[in-house]
Image 1: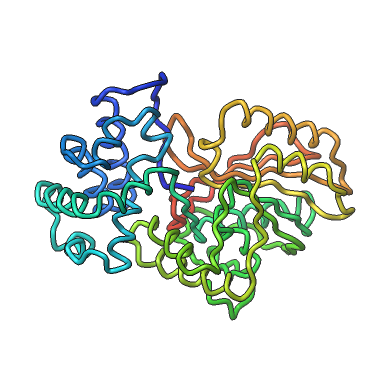
Image 2: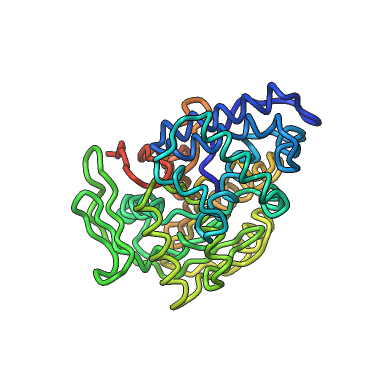
Length: 362
């Protein structure tokens, strides 16, 4: 899902300009804090767009929901990046190259481009960004290394909100986590985040299966669909672009197993399937929890924890999440497993796009 944040927005129905503007400003600041100054400029340009007469600008200004929860600013940013990647408008080049960095100039240029591509850009506001970031799988792999000596080394992975399934191919990636290496050495996907703190455990990891679900899964083997996902990648990060290209290559060789399904329905379906002895069943997700309605989150939590109470040493269960802490806005890697202590283990804090991991676990 999207590289957005959760804010303390309340209420429903039509939102006034001040609330929409504040959401855009907070998203822009979040981009700056995450080394994405170009994306921040493009996000902030939507403030000026709200005052114009384009259909896109008016739709942003009249947004009925919560702009941060809905990833509104990043929806439109993805559409502009798509124009650039397809060569549909060369005027955007100087912004993405960093040659134009004055906000007023960016505002004027974005307004002109939107005026000329208004109807083409408008559908990008229809749904949230479908972003996938292979770098986040380093967190999942680190969690598996931590879990291995505690609950077992054979894993069945089930990813909620898998989008294009990039993290549902993590068994095909090569990882270097503070010198602890895992995965096929000849993989085109090389993941080596900046590591802070002690290294993760050296332990066996055998992923026997990976499945995922998403309400609107993306087929990376389809060229246009793959380009759409790539458009949501923040353009400043060339390493992320390279990882996206590697993921598209691997998906062309063998598509990830991702089905169209509601997260709650899929969790219940997966829990109802036979659990192989000697295998750790894991549910995992990254930057997706905020997009699931609160009542559905409650039911998912209840279902997984109820299943956890029935888990045994022969058939363990674990829940791994990389999500935003609503109080600190930090992205935290947390794990809970059954059998085991009845609490979450905070393993690490991480950069949203996989650039670094700050390991906190013993």
